[in-house]
Image (cartoon, rainbow, N blue to C red; front, side):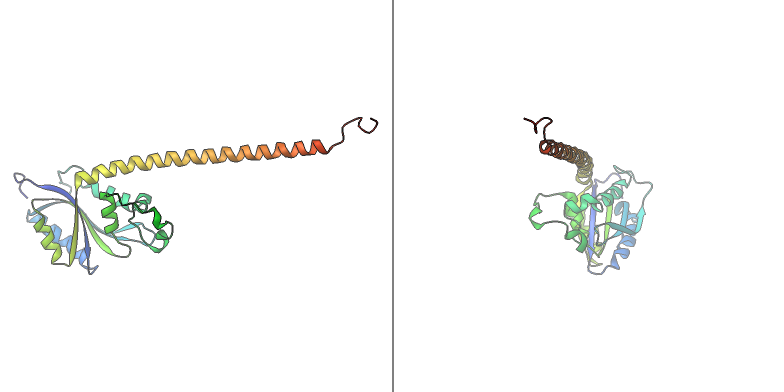
Amino acid sequence: MSDSQQSLDNVISVSFEEDANAYAAITRLKELDSQQQIGLAAAAVVVRNQDGTIEEKDEVSNPDWSGTAGGGVLGLLIGVIGGPLGVLIGGATGVLVGSLFDIDDADETESVLGDISQAVRVGHTEVLAELAEQSYEVIDNAMAQLGGSVLRRSVADVEAEIAAAERAQREAKRKARKELRHARHDKREEAVHAKVEALKGKLHHKKPVGAAGA
């Protein structure tokens, strides 16, 4: 793809009617890149397991990629949506994970990571890719020929939410540790209080010295 032509840096998630076509899609993306119709930074065939984790089945990357993160955005994305945060933003709906959350906790807030996470369905093979494209038609048509449905989000938006997710996860860990410390502290206070009250009870039941001759 010519550098003189304006391109859009995007992350795409492609779902297929037949899982095997995901591998053919990786080959097609490489062909489009070699024909300079797109600039492919990285692509991966992934599947979400029942526990919500994401497993990479195949991957390609371009070491000469001159984009914002050298293709590293895709690796970060997979790590986020396949981890605990992916569960929280609604991506994992497997039997094990889905049973952990109440449907009343659902949040309708729009999220780029949430959209991509939900697109990677449990038990289905999907393609995730980071690429530069001049128009959506090239990718959309190529994936449609393989029975693929494309979800597209800008790299800038994905990067922004990954950064926010990292901050949120760090803050959540800090808060969780603080709550645990408080819980331990409260437990100690309750135990100490109970012990003191028990000792008081024993003292009250003892007969005061000299009381018998009074």
